[in-house]
Image 1 (cartoon, rainbow, N blue to C red):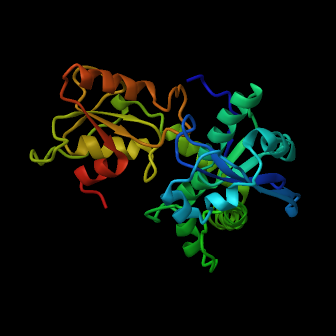
Image 2: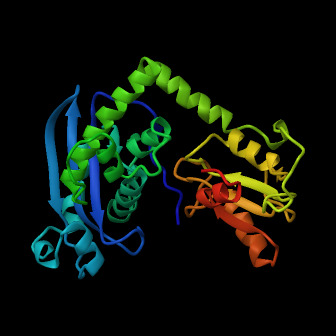
Amino acid sequence: MYSRNKGKSLVTFPTSFTVIDIETTGLDTVYDSIIELSAVKVKDGIVTHTFSTLVNPRRPLDWFITELTGITDEMLKDAPLITDTLDTFTDFLGDDIIVGHNVNFDINFIYDTYKQIANKDFANDFVDTLRLARFLLKDLQHHRLSDLTEYFRFGVDVKHRGLDDANVTLAILSALKDTAVKEYGDITDFEKAFNARIHLAKIRAKDVTATNTDFDISNPLYNKNCVFTGTLEKMIRKQAFQLVVDCGGHIEDGITKHTNYLIVGSLDYARNIKDGKSNKLKKAEQWIIKGKDLQILSENTFYDMVETP
């Protein structure tokens, strides 16, 4: 797999942009196909144009996709092929900033398909409302579109259809902007706070020491070597480091043969990602194959181990 030359991930609230949402036959850009392309263009805060088309994947849909989206094989049989509609879609987007919820998923599908069809990069900068929501609404357990529509009391259902979900995402972007202004005073201060969080996440292992010495030796992290990769959803990395050392565990900056646990956060915005994996994750997998006693943990499993709600 080549390295995607995507645009920049922006943490802001643009006034002119295009919201996108796609539906696909599955999650894998290699084996699955786009079945719906939708977008809502916004200029100076006003919706100016919309775009939506079904796309014929030239194969039957899995029952789960039909159940999830309501899209059927009958609906797709006369729809255009992706080779006939992707150029029209990318022309509609132009060089706009792209907004979407978990937008890396949509962009990766568009990028890989565009690369295959036209041998061109899809390099628009983008804003992810999922990323904004995780920062602004830390008390929410989940940040799916359905969770956010319920939280903001929109009174609409998430239908897993392109144009409907793009419009919901647009409403969520506006609500998150109001939340950011209410909490931080203005967007500039919000951006500073977000960037400060990213800076704190880069803290080194040696900078954290335990706040107690009365350790529970039955805790699974006691006397274990832990490494983190990716961005944590619930807290900054310094706080996670502190949880480990306060359990009597040890923090390492990199994977070694002595590492016991690799805790994996979101890799969507991490650097040096290839084939969907960070270098730390790849090294951990190599040590596991060699028979080392090393476990790869999700963020939520990590919290269970330190008994954090």
